[in-house]
Image 1: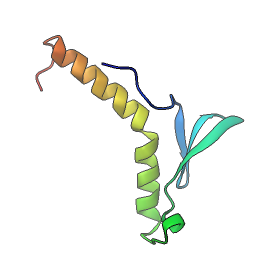
Image 2: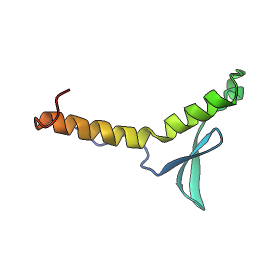
Image 3: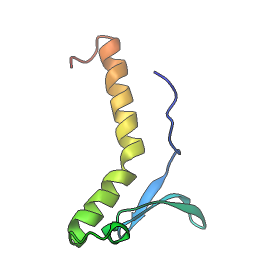
Image 4: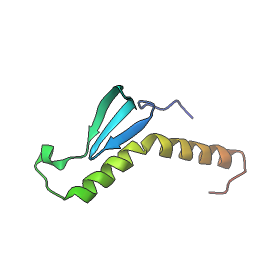
Amino acid sequence: MSAPQFTPGPWWTELDKVFVGTPPDYSLIADADPDCKGGHDGAEPRLANARLIAAAPDLYEALRDLIAGADAGLVIV
């Protein structure tokens, strides 16, 4: 499997914003606020979307481990 093509974590959320790095050295990497596109879907979906985005590195690692286990015959997928 090739190396990941994303910024390594930690990724974390504050409200509907997603950041990478550890304070005080961090950067905003995603804004789940739909107002930047004119949409209004309520706070809960924005917060859930931000948490899902922030979980991307952990989800990638879990998938990578699952694939490695399947390749080794340890996991049936």
